[in-house]
Length: 106
Image (tube, rainbow, N blue to C red; front, side, top):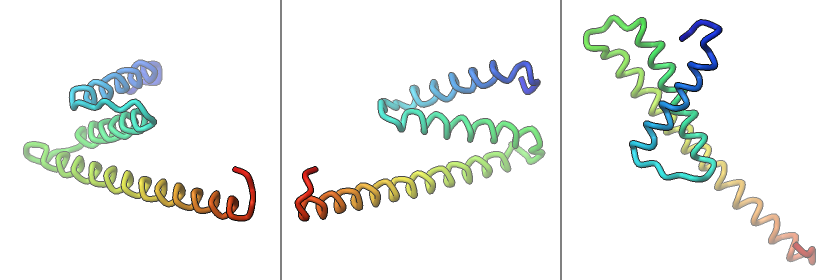
């Protein structure tokens, strides 16, 4: 599937696979997180599959460790994005309140 002519099919299958995994995990999101969850999982899956092709450890233990690190990275990134989103929301709300206190109709 890594040949250039198979890339569209490969991406389509990866998209279906990540959607199915989230569905089976019980995901019911209907907001923008639906897309980010699936994109994150697809990236982790594809990188782990590529890593696994060169893993010579017994029982693919290095691949399991690689997966653990990628999931931890994904969790940390999600927390950072959530923190930034919260800060932006707070700052925007404060700015609107300051403008209202100055008589601006918002």
